[in-house]
Amino acid sequence: MKVLIARPMTAEIEVRARRDFDVEIRESNTPLTVSEMTHALQTFDIVVPTLGDRFNADVFAAVAAPQCKLLANFGVGYNHIDVSAARDAGIQVTNTPGAVTDATADIAMTLILMSARRAGEGERLVRAGEWSGWHPTQMLGQHVTGKSVGIVGMGRIGQAIARRCHFGFGMDVCYVARSEKDLDFEATRAPDLTAMAGMVDILVVAVPGAPETYHLINADILQSMKPSAHLINIARGEIVEESALVQALETGGIAGAGLDVYEFEPAVPESLRSLDNVTLLPHLGTATAEVRTNMGHMALDNVDAFSKGLALPNPV
Image (tube, rainbow, N blue to C red):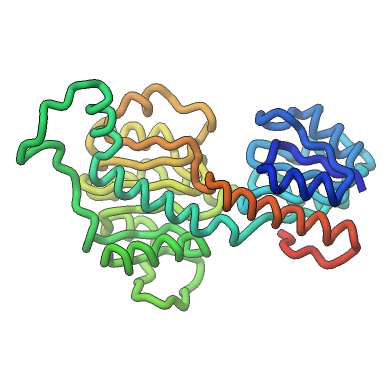
């Protein structure tokens, strides 16, 4: 079977792919264009897309009888793929859950600490040569240990973040989710998002990107938060209404934010970049060689199973 991998991968994954499959590995790191996506559906049996490759209903509708029968997505999130339209076109979709959990949770903790302790602002101060030396009231941030954290979405990643907050920093954990979770640590399920937003010191977004989570964190939720609270987003950018977040940060509605994803990624507005009370990372959630290699193996495991007519390990 002919396989297209939409981005360059780690050396280990490229070696395996070339060894085991009739593969073409695209050299560009930019998202697939519409013409590239339609060509891929017409030409390849399996495509390994990733974030930014927007296989929407129009793309599938443009190909009457696709040769492609599997989109083996590289990533746990698949909101860039219209799964229903793919199925209607006779194309299965898989993803790479599990491989990203710990790395993404680690980035959440990085952002919690950086935002609360004003680390990004301090680093910029030193680099600019404007640090005048230590004094008792220098850059006073917020102590994280013993504070409260609210997790928006208590799936694999949400639980990994909550576990780090509880066991590592003695934080009180509450969460919102569609159902009560059986956890190995103490946590309280909040009655709703608005109530939880008003109670916690740190609000962490960990739900998948989907139509029902679009702008879930909006002006009303941000207004419910404490002026001393921090918002952390390691999920998908469009879950947070970016313009409302900018206003909340500019007016002191919340104390700070830590972001690894953006509503119009990779575009980040100047109104956000100019603020000192926001930490901005370039979507580093899974950016370690080990994790990206594990993700690649998981995607190729799905490719391998499909090519052999076996059950797919990670269907969505």
